[in-house]
Length: 343
Image (cartoon, rainbow, N blue to C red; front, side, top):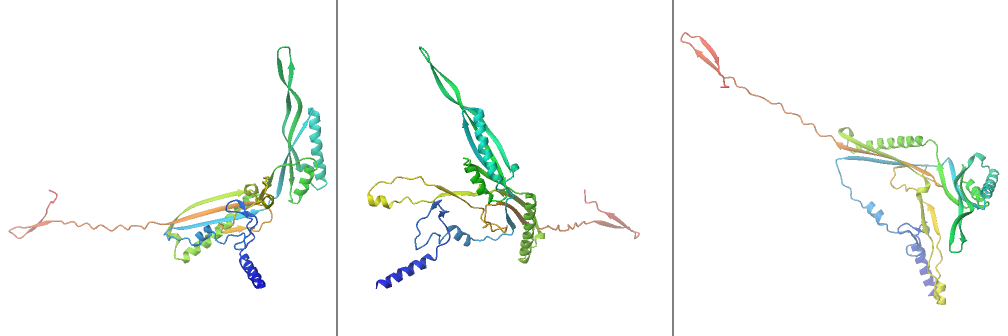
């Protein structure tokens, strides 16, 4: 009996777990983490109202024809630039400058052995200011507070250019070994962005011709339509698509057992790269990406309205009656007289 119950429970778990997907810890609906790996539904959503609404959308026929095409191209960066900020303090200006140069030189030497050229490392001076403290001068009947410099603070940014993402780990190691930990940003650069837009434009024109042929097969001759056009293009960098979440569970079973309070710990914020979704695009060039890329897109929308039918003017027939009088004289001659009807 016990064995049959175990088999039944195991079967129930396996059957219902078949719905689980590779969703991970992040829950896109409420920006929280799901730790409820329930056998009934897993981490995935079985019912998504937005998807169901799209599937059951009611189509409204119209005499207008709209061709709306969108294309996206994922472009890998040619070069990258990492920017680190470092700050140094010292008792004198010479000492401060010497200490910070020593740290920067250590980075240069370390990266030189890793294949990073000297010209790919640039220093940007941010600020160099004295630090003051208050000096109290006591007199017989009063005190005087005077600001006097007690040291200097020098801030600089170090820009490091590299071409391979695998080099970034060496750059981090070189900076960390010289007490440089503040990574400000990483910039991505590509060459000839105009060529990318030209490529997208050519692909969109092909899609438009295919859609025109499709509507013609449905009986719409677009030559009988007036056309209106709108287009758009854009370029997004990876820094625009990093999202954050916190993966944690605040339930403490140890506190329940020991009847003691819970000490709240700082929850670490995690970040991940989420590029543009391909859901609304007709064409995606280089869709499979492994690393953050630059996403360049273009949209073209054509609206065809039926041309107004030409109204053929009917010919106006004007009937004019000319009245004539015939006067016969006694001798038999006939005289024709016209009647003036304007009087």
